[in-house]
Length: 114
Length: 112
Image 1 (cartoon, rainbow over the protein chains, first blue to last red):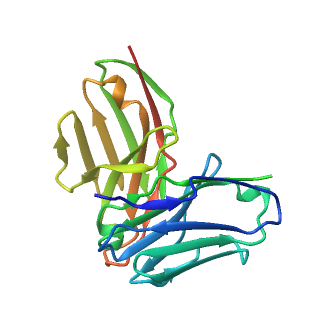
Image 2: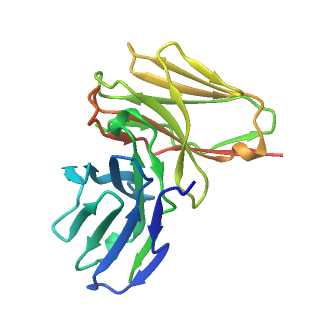
């Protein structure tokens, strides 16, 4: 069975450029989560969706970050403009039932902003 | 105060040893508890859920103390393959829409 799919797996860009990360959740999962992981801060929730609707975006660092989920099988996380402090691993995860069921993580996108 | 606090370690133990990790959480209304495992440069994966009465899965035992807001994970007969970071995870409330909070993780290295 296909798990959560993320692309690209690695991204190197220069400060000021736009970055778009993509995620395809597991089919049938109603919840989709975007996380960021750094050595300093650990795993942080950025935003999550339920049935394609954003529920909690309080973790989005600032207006440079935006996320969309146009349909049940696709979501994007966009950073514009990117900054070196955005360098991190970005994970997408999906689940059947929010905080009470297992979240399945994608392999992550390793972002380096120079 | 962070929602979930863990000892970051690292824990370095020989094969066959028993090792225990602890974690505390701040929200007394939390209803769901988990341990996730994360291998180096990989994504987190569920290791086991933690139930009120405690539960075992092979060499792994999880305990929950609601009064103290404390969760533990015990690994018996450690294997080299147990080397990873173990994340303590708690949800924020009992509702379906509750989000998960991840601890920073405890790093374990099992040596031969």
